[in-house]
Length: 69
Picture (cartoon, one colour):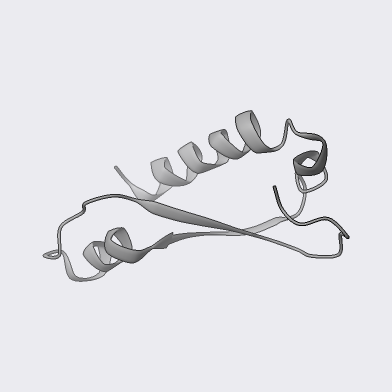
């Protein structure tokens, strides 16, 4: 899976599962970064680690009184 495809999948999950909730809806236009983390990121860098799972973290601009869902 390419990084572009992984980004698209992560954005689809956010749109379909998170941004539909009342609190999540407030974060819809506040996404600033998607980051590939842990083993997937290490494998992307060194090409030898192998991938057991893919962890993608989403970061948003703050400013709300409610935590991210």
